[in-house]
Length: 393
Ligand SMILES: Cc1cc2nc3c(=O)[nH]c(=O)nc-3n(C[C@H](O)[C@H](O)[C@H](O)COP(=O)(O)O)c2cc1C
Image (cartoon, rainbow, N blue to C red; front, side, top):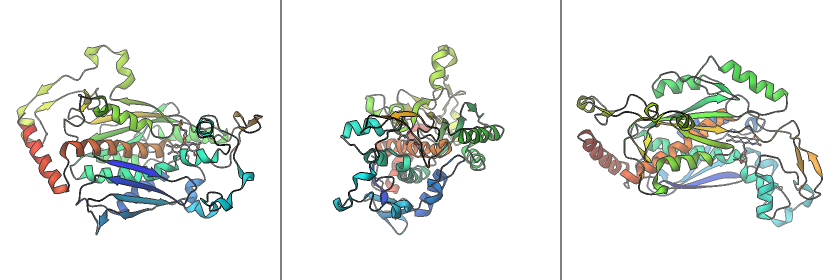
């Protein structure tokens, strides 16, 4: 199993993740992870924080001479801003300063429910951890998952498919070409015709002190049939993917394949008919079975069916607005109009990288459950045996 935990506050010294279960012998370097961290930091519409932070990962355990050794992997991403926060975020009691409490909670953020739940009168104790700064280290974990999946020719690409209501049309490209198209876009979209409109929308929102959300789409190719299971609720892969996506800060909806649109169509216009051609298996396909549509998004009955996995997820507009929203001070109970100094206007491009990472983690977990071994070589043997079996099924 691929297990991980993250720790760390937004203005603390660092974000840390410990990953358990990665087999020995996987090539892993800080450079691979840093490339994903740089993508998460980019994208049109980010705020001042991104100019301060230039995220770099440090691998502190579990890797020796460029390869995993089977022990837990510790990843750390330092917060450069820590230098300005050492006393305000210090674990030492002598730095306590009740005059710097944050008592104004932002609508749409974790501030008020978190303060009520944990009995805090200083909202900073909530916002530091609820902040999406945490996604920096989650992306680092996702890079490890992608490295593992890459050993088995499973590829993943995420992009912005909708921004503030402007929809992109995905061109019919292989994932490598789709990735290079997305890499050329400042808003990480796959459709250059809608990019100027998306940027204009972000600029308009910025001038109005507002924020915008959107939809990200993630596709995984090369995934064999049979990951996940129908037998128990928590083994259903679609359920696990939905939970992972919804755990991303500000994500409010998930669709697999047709998703909500399926509810409006007739069954005959939804389900992907099944065909068989024996020669496909000898020409590079994993099986002779194939579909001409993929409305299921690659998952039926909680299991992968051999088609591409297609997941879309909706991100709400960022809750910290320059334009004041009405709220109430949690100490004085007086109304106030929240204003902010620094925040993103739109983080949907960055969120597409986070979503790519969490899908990679769920697929890596399901892959390890099915083909698990203590070394990459052992997994490869297990996988090769399964592929041989599938070809003849
Ligand atoms: C990549 C990314 C960047 C974000 N940046 C901000 C930000 O700058 N300001 C903000 O208020 N919220 C930001 N958010 C969203 C909040 O973290 C999120 O809305 C908050 O934690 C409350 O959780 P919820 O929206 O899931 O209920 C960001 C989310 C993501 C995924």
